[in-house]
Length: 134
Image 1 (cartoon, rainbow, N blue to C red):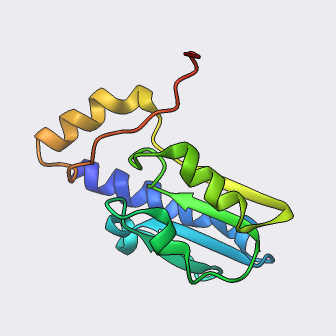
Image 2: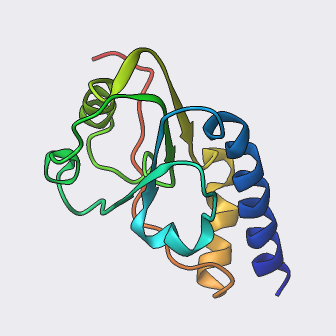
């Protein structure tokens, strides 16, 4: 019960924080389809993103450029982060802002414990950008 309360509180704060970026801008909010019920801000266009599908099929009908794009609960589990960011860049105006909301990997073990104990729904495998160059 405590974990569910913390989760609700996180998303409540998340929604409030987003409002300051989305309120006065032409904006797109890309939300993991599994997080659809947790995000309730009313100031942006929404794209409920399915991480099992390719990005092109999900953005092909977007014909406008945005001042702000916010990404929630997608980046850490999408298979090709670089391609994802490249495609989003084409949807931003020249001075547009990209805001990424992602899980802090330091919490990975706690997240797994919460999943195993049933306090949190299961998360897909995480995807990372590695700092080490090949």
